[in-house]
Image (cartoon, rainbow, N blue to C red; front, side, top):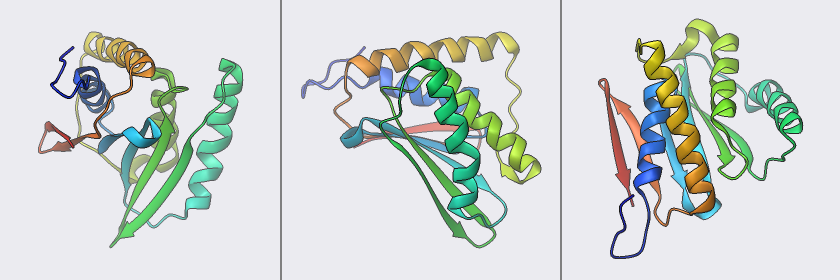
Length: 167
């Protein structure tokens, strides 16, 4: 982990966002929101959507998931903005109650609901690499749950590469 002059620990945050994009190609970008200690996941779907229809899919599933885990969500929000024939959907979740399994659940629910309308890069990670990235996501989520990152960090996918920015 790198320590910067301003005392910020961001290496695990950068690693977390990178691993999420490597493991889940359906996620267009992921942003660590320092003020809320939350992650914002962005997905693109090639149809107009209402936020209420997305809420109906994700909210009950995630509430049930957290009930089984014995936790509650502090931050849960879904936003949607349409640009031409594409809906850019953002799911915001607090880091403290988030797990790697929940990230996988969100992605899987959206894949099943929107099938061919979900925009993503085809990436064929070998199964052992998928397991490794899932382990890294779990480890780094645990790390930033106990140590806040003092910078906002965003990772996005562009032409098969993952780009990370901090501010």
